[in-house]
Image (tube, rainbow, N blue to C red; front, side, top):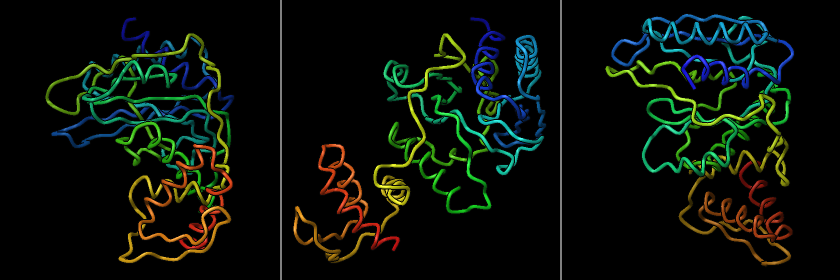
Length: 279
């Protein structure tokens, strides 16, 4: 697959779920690893096959002219790269910022699209088309981001959770990574045969609710408190008195118990943890 075909295949898959909006293509000129010039272009959706092919050719051509080329993972409702311009999502994404200790064969079994970015891997999974909560609804918007972060970490503990932003742009395969002195190829490693990939993941709340998703994400990032002495939280029907001093460990243990089928007990413990930490 040549470079133009890689870019076209990726862009076709990326935009195929959306009937309207704009695809952002961002061009950056780096100087010493820092962005020196940034240009943003917007293509109206839906795009024809020929328009996608022309855009792919343009991306490769501009890369050869010295630009790092990125595409907005999610469409914009207006010609803007701001987060508030993102209202729909049909793809989740993951940035693994390393090349070592990565099982590529395992990744290919779990993700619909994989791009080697030069210094790492960008992994994509098609999800059920849904609305991204408006930023003005801060709680709902934060819960959506927490759910995305939790999914990222569940897939790879080294995932860059800073990428869990609705206006995220990631590199277009077939182009070049010119951020450092030596150009690196951005390569499409895996793609589906059809642009409309079978949905393998649906966006829905955790069995214990969105508040639990937020706690779980924080626990996976080691952001919950550790206390000097055991804190009494309450009683459960299965385990009697529940004491905890390491809240990160308590949340992760509770989630492990749920996965093992101890849902009644873990649901009671989850309620105790949520009531104490967020009540």
